Length: 282
Image 1: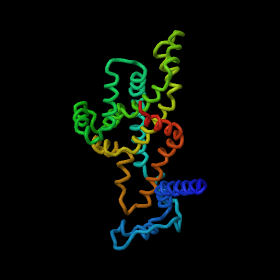
Image 2: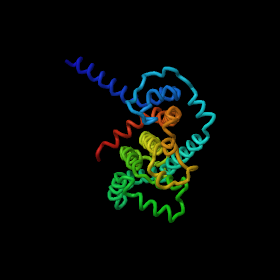
Image 3: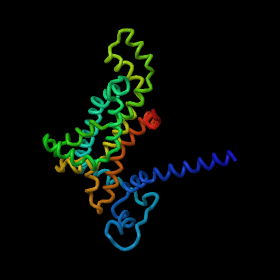
Image 4: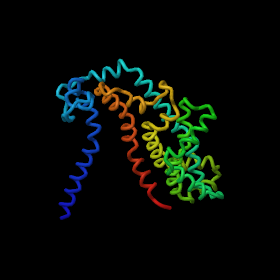
């Protein structure tokens, strides 16, 4: 009975994994198809003809034409890719400068109102962007940051989700270690750098991995705050590609997925630890 359960679980996980990877495989195979082959399979969608779209598991006539066009004849793709990286890295830098000290202070210093501030962080984390959109727009407009990358970077730099996640890890550091460091003459900043950083590294990295994945593909914030097309990220550029260029669009989408996949693969261990810690109640 136990063996049958294990086999069923393995089969279920295998099927789930294949279904999860299916969109990525779809993008990869579609990027290797020519316009004629894609027109045959996706004609009802591309040309709005009668019938049903279909798909082959592998391309019948594989070609690198879409990839060559992307590399040699699509400077706007790379321009908007660097816009995306500038926004993402800017938000991560802001999280490092503001979110990290905030999480450490909440976790290690029993200041008055700490619990209230922590609950406020959770409340802000739960609010969807649509709730704070108008107020953020008015503030950014008054500061003159609209139609700049800072309009997306500045609000994201103060996101409370990473504070919540890193707070959980910093709370797990034994107080005895910090007291021993104080007895040895270490200052609070030295404790933060030499003890908080190493022992909370898993939480810090998991928070940054999650923030990278979220910021790399954000759509609503740049759509609302940025009107200049030259400042668009990839998340706004990809939907603008016409359906008649389906092969090129699939190739661009596949290439745009590579950085998040790379970051996720490198930080998967820390991400799993962060999700586990975030699920534990005080």
